[in-house]
Amino acid sequence: MTEEKSLNFLEEIIEEDLKAGKYTTIVTRFPPEPNGYLHMGHATSICLNFGLTKKFPGYTNLRFDDTNPVTEETEYVDSIKDDIRWLGFEWKNELYASDYFDTLFQYAIVLINKGLAYVDDSTSEQMAVLKGTPTEPGKDSAYRTRTVAENLELFEKMKSGAFPDGSRTLRAKIDMAHTNMLMRDPVLYRIKHAHHHRTGDKWCLYPMYDFAHGQCDSIEKITHSICTLEFVPHRELYDWLIEKLEIYPSHQYEFARRNLTYTVMSKRKLLQLVTEKHVEGWDDPRMPTISGMRRRGFTPASIRNFCERIGIAKRENLADLSLLEFCVREDLNSIAQRRMVVYFPAFKSSSMISSGKFRLFSSVMVAKLRNSEW
Image (cartoon, rainbow, N blue to C red; front, side, top):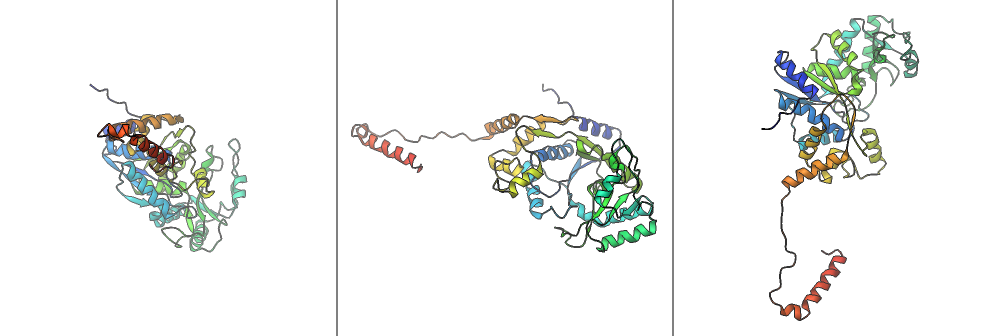
């Protein structure tokens, strides 16, 4: 009789939500930014989000966070889809943050009309100075008292391309003395005149991650929005925006990253290796990307097994690379086909050996091996 495996903290939350009748269908999402290939850190998130809706009734969406047109490419979108399918998962809906640009713009209008957002002409350097420190409150921007009518007019002009990059932003009006630095009038929109891989040149006004993230979750009615621990301070803003917009109350949960020993897991540093041609590409077998691991000979089952073994927790941890190597050996041992081969069958007669032909054959064989003909 096998012992039943204990639930991780996210599974316990979902189980309680289902028992309480809070949800009948669990909806998660995997939301990569298409600015590079997926690596082993993403594999943990993929297995977690898709694994939860395999264990509990529901489904997972694939949503590309394509709010930064400067760094995003269709090549990355295609590679991400290939990697997820190779790992053995399939999403219900393929979605993009850019699908919601019109809706997000209208949400911003709602905040302006409620007096909860304003257009700021301050530079990023000026905003940084006014923001204060963790121990000192910030100071209000000189543009914080603009009227609703003035903010609406300026925001429309920002959308139409009347202003250059970096000249204006839309900020939430919260509290410049808030203990959470992210709640001190965060930027919601910035101007960026750049060609988008899906919307072309329609937009020059793009939402920040913190504004797009929670609202996209709400539009898709995501029940459990799962992020890594660095987004804990962002949760307060996530909840504030949903509350003020009065939209579907998605909720954010955080888990700890699982880093690998002796392995670079920064997409920025991996991109540097590619652009500076230290490797052949994102799928170079030396890279810790999923496509690189595939070329190296790792199997989907071994990576899924590794992600399951290291588990999910609330504390940062470092997984040993040897465990991943063990997982692939274990999987290959169970699926690899065995073959017995006789390279040099027994000779038909002993006369061949006594005549010296065997010695001649052996010397020819050695010569060919040395010349890499075999």
